[in-house]
Image (tube, rainbow, N blue to C red; front, top):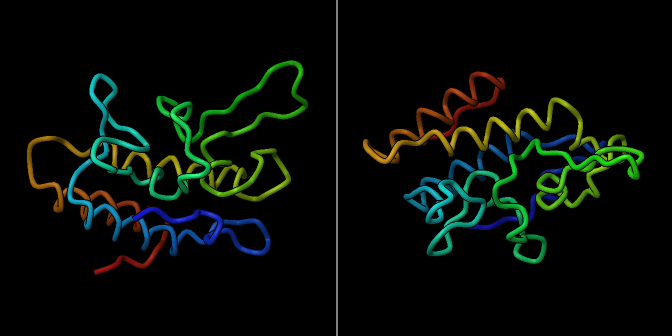
Length: 150
């Protein structure tokens, strides 16, 4: 289930990490499989409409194949830009990805989203998918002091 990540941005620009955790957990368990593409591996949007832990926060109208292969913490920066931009975070949370404009690009929130991505990407083909999702996200909840779900 794809959500618009903007619903998880608070008035002060920070992320509602508990809300994101709840949505991602439900999404991954209902989906029942990893989001992958041939010759790529894990993908924000994969085969059969699958979406990873970060991809499920990117609405269709802001998703682009150009995001694939870029980590959530990936930043564009060129001498012509005055500040770096985070295209994956911008797509998910509706920010333009500029430092200081929206708290979503703050270091803590970038790290949180990166950890979400890792929780999906480290699921192994062998073993029970649901058990791995639960274990990975339970660890994330402990690491980020979130309330574990279900």
